[in-house]
Image 1 (cartoon, rainbow, N blue to C red):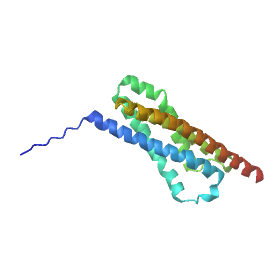
Image 2 (cartoon, rainbow, N blue to C red):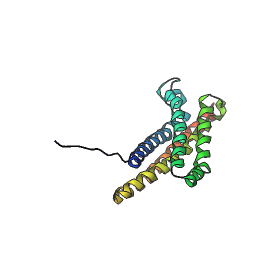
Image 3 (cartoon, rainbow, N blue to C red):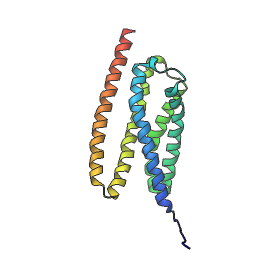
Image 4 (cartoon, helix red, strand yellow):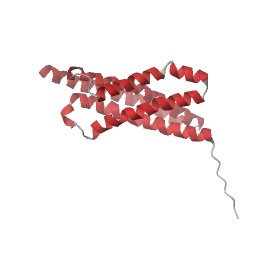
Length: 178
């Protein structure tokens, strides 16, 4: 008989979980970067209590879990990493989650709806997640993939900036007409 033993390395499992989480972060940030400017420019295209509205009711939970997970990962890495997180990304993350809840509770007057674009500061998390992904690719010897990823990031950044500027221009034009 053949005996099959499977051994799980906790660090590898944690690393895989972190990579999966970073991938979800990239997807959510990309969705925000595409949808938020359109939502600002053409709000009538998104019905209240529709799928996009539901999405923005659920995502603050993801970002709260993200804060807790980052805090846990930093504390597992030692006191120095924990202090580094507490003095840098932690406050950025908390500020954005508070903004999410303020917007969710509709505490912002209609004249300040452009504040929803502040959520786009999460694009910094996109870069952070991509660096983690590139580190993994590099550790596996996939240097060409790292170069392609860098080029794609530049192209995506240019497209997103143009998209946001175009939608903000439409928003401003529509406000001027009203």
